[in-house]
Length: 164
Image (cartoon, rainbow, N blue to C red; front, side, top):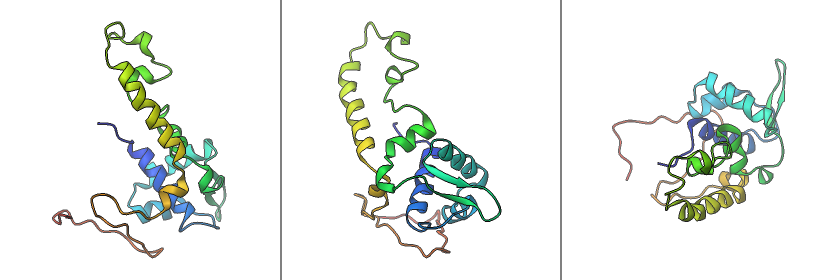
């Protein structure tokens, strides 16, 4: 299954928080971790990676924190995923450091060509989708509506409740 890693998920959540609820101020990783119920140590590492890739600006010190490195419309989902997980690749043969030459099936592979279309479209879509786009409340096709939270609100997930 093609899916973002938890690090990429957490990075997108943190950036969306900085773009919305944290806009115009410095935000500590603990606040973001608490807001989304993310393990604090893992989020701290995610934030460091985002800072290293210039997606957030880090201000050290007791009153420091993080803010977006540039406008949310100028940050693509692709940049965030690549910062956290490396190159966007639907299969190992599309990874720059791996490539078809190192694949045992490359001489007999019949799916690399058709997968190329998917690879190109996936990268295009992730590059064209900005953080600002991700922050817009849009109802998912499953009918679950996005929720607006107060800055100090906590989301509690009840395992025995099935959403329909």
